[in-house]
Image 1 (tube, protein in one colour):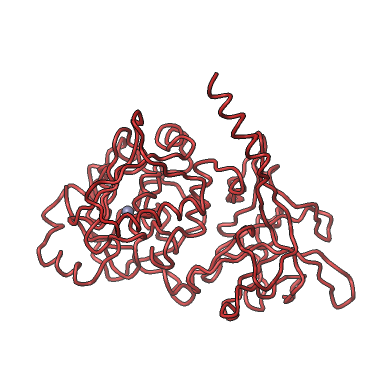
Image 2 (cartoon, rainbow, N blue to C red):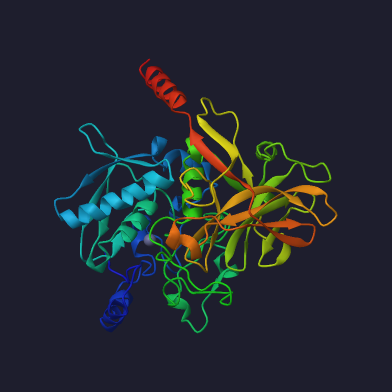
Length: 443
Ligand SMILES: [Zn+2]
């Protein structure tokens, strides 16, 4: 096994590793993806199709069937090498998944054949295999990286998430000016790692920017100031959405954001307007797009496959990377109640509000879908859909929604009376579902 620059680097470590010429000693593996070595991705040349196929791809059914953890349940063991402090960090990492996704980390029990083992090894920052390998799968972390962030990242690999900055389309989003080509992380091939939606500068599966052998630099540095796993500790909004999609999470995770250009017929019929129509009588569908350092929710225009959003005081119709909100049908025992709710702006309960957007400028600040009736200058009213964010400025006095930013025609309105998409679970329904599932599995 090899050691390479860890993902959460300190400059001193980089210098040390290069001084020792550590990575150039090892020729057959990627030093840029040390924690992917479990699938043996060669950095240059000799790229075999078999290793490619094992890499993460949301689109590949064979991976979904064979390589993900059934029902999102991952059994774990903690190695005796972990200190109480390490265990505390591991538990925080588990909690992050339990809060934002339907993944469940449960203690190993006799008879569990497939499981992960968390183990400290100071030779690595982090290191594990991609997807479920079968049998015992060790997740190493160590050195300066005995932290929740690293553990979340490595757990992400074991759940089948690959590095964001090695996406095949990554050069549309990051670049590597002045870098030696050999130090740039390899982009995965079209067949193994197709685009999985909006590029996520905030992904926990993204290395930090600004080093040739890490994630490169954002192309649009005027609008994106930060990227990398420490934008905020934990899973980004898009990380969580990706996992919830890959694992078909239900409950309040069952909504899905789908790239509009790839919508199947059934996915199109899964779009939800909540009963509202645009002025032209067409249903009012939510969408979201990346724009100037944010992922912004807005109104979808099907005829042009565009998403109309407000940014500052301007209205923009964006066609690149449009995602629409869908609610897959045909699932039995839906216990999640999605609805548009008027929420208190002060002391906001964000546990039920469904986050829809995020900002890469403001440390992964989340925004939400807002619907409102706006009175226009000619006194006509129009139902509009847009974003509302938690107001950072007023956070000191408790969480609070800012004004919703609404587009009517070509004018941006600031609205303080709106409804937000929320989801709550019907507990009676959940109990019934658990009872039914255990009954079915026993026969
Ligand atoms: Zn990694």
